[in-house]
Image 1 (cartoon, each protein chain N blue to C red):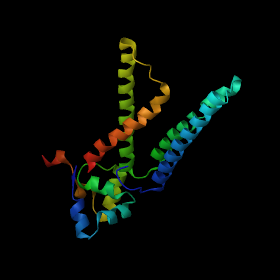
Image 2: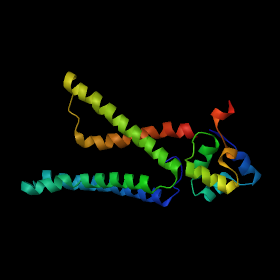
Image 3: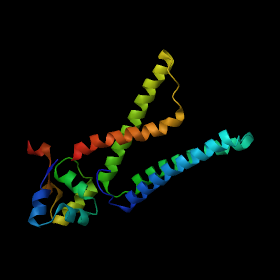
Image 4: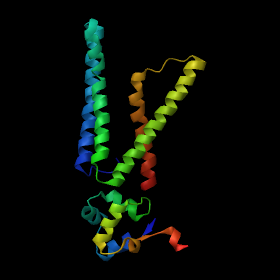
Length: 67
Length: 134
């Protein structure tokens, strides 16, 4: 699933490690989500949304709705 | 795991796995000495024979505990994929071996090796999983 994590992270000048620490997950998790290789669960997606002050759909792009 | 150890649950799981592996070696050696060298016999043989299996059961329980306690869903997912690789590999190896036993008359596969085959296959799965998420 495509997402804007990398951009949002860069806007805040956070490294993957910084974001991982805030989410209480591993840096590898952040990398896998950011590159679209791993889709987070709903609770983790909500946590991300809260952290960035956005709605889930403003971070993650549903491939279905794009078409 | 793909990376350095990140969580307390992961640390405990790795520690348990190493302690378990060490205990298997020590207890297997002790059981072998007791039965083959000291010629232990009678009802005492049974608990001594079972002794090396206990750390294996303990590590399996610790694996389940890790999966229950690990909060990082990605890391949990990685271990699950490796375990599935281990299960699939073990089934494949034992099925092929079983057929070879039946139809080609090769040496019987000692069931004591199945646990080792499982972790070997799980470890072989790791680089495949690693490449996917690199």
